[in-house]
Structures are given as structure tokens and as C-alpha cells.
Image (tube, rainbow, N blue to C red; front, side, top):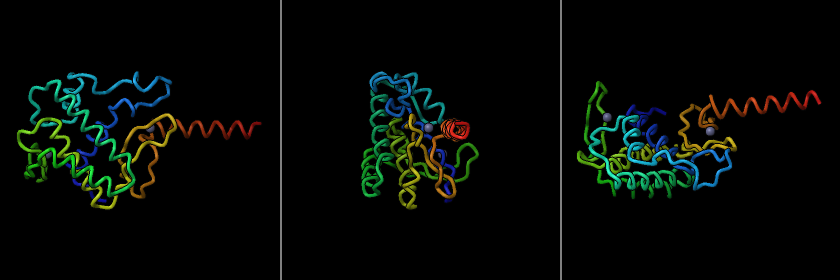
Length: 195
Ligand SMILES: [Zn+2]
Ligand SMILES: [Zn+2]
């Protein structure tokens, strides 16, 4: 599957956004959901998020931006949660329509021509809804919705996009979750062999 660079960047952004939600936090500590930390707990965290993902045109951010971004995040989480393309399509359509997109060709920062979907004066929430929403639209159009996944490690619920050739990726990160489970399986086999 050929994914243009801007779509890939938007996919990284939406995955990170969904994973800031407290319900994406591994329940390993056994804390009740309400006490798990929100990666977008305050305005500072929102500024950090915008900087991390080089979201352009972010002016001064306010409490209402934080609320709006958390709202958009919840909609994106629903898209990751459904297996049904009809449901995913209507969620994307609603999000993108509400964000008021204005497709514009751009070749900023040394990148080749690509399309920005956010309106020029969009709020950060509308910016995310438009560009990340269209990146997910691209995945749905390509018939690749099953690539939008949640980690299969029992104590991890992180969202990720499986860009592997044969759609075989099961963990948010092979370095952390995948490796951890392999080590556990290896130890279990050793124990069995020893016993
Ligand atoms: Zn761009
Ligand atoms: Zn994981």
C-alpha cells in the first residue's frame, strides 16, 4: 500500500492523539479508569502535542481548544474501535464535515506537493479533524480499514496503524509489547521443558 508522506504523518498524529486518552493507558497498575492519566490533561500538554506533531498555524490555545481536541479524540477512538466500514465512513464524514475542510495544495518545508485539508484559519481541533480524518478516509477508501488496530498485548490498549506488507502486526510496538510477550512465552516454554 503506497501511502503519501502527509497521510503517513497524519496517521502518526491520529494514533498518538488516540493514545493520549486515559482509556488507552495500559490497566497494568490496576488503577480505576478515572485515575489513569490523560495525555492531554492541560493546555501545556496540548501545546506539547502540537509541537511534537508540527501542527502548523497553532496560535494561542485555550481551554475550549482542549475540550474540542478531546472531543475529536473520542470520535477518532470510535473509528479505531469499529470493524464496520459503513460505521467508520459515517464517523469520518461527520468529523470532516464539522471541521469545514478547504483542500489546498502545499509544498512547504521541502516536501513535495501534497494536499492540506484544514481550512486556513482552522482551530487546532478542526485542523486535526480535517487532516487526520482525511488520512483515515484514505485508509477506508483503500479497503484497508482492518489496519487500524488496537494492541493485542493483554495489558495494553494502544491504537496503531499496521503498515506491514501482510497486515500481520499485532502489537503497538515490537520493541515493547511484542518483545515483552515473546520473552514471557519463551520463559513459559522453558519452564514447561524443565518441569
Ligand atoms: Zn503539509
Ligand atoms: Zn502495546
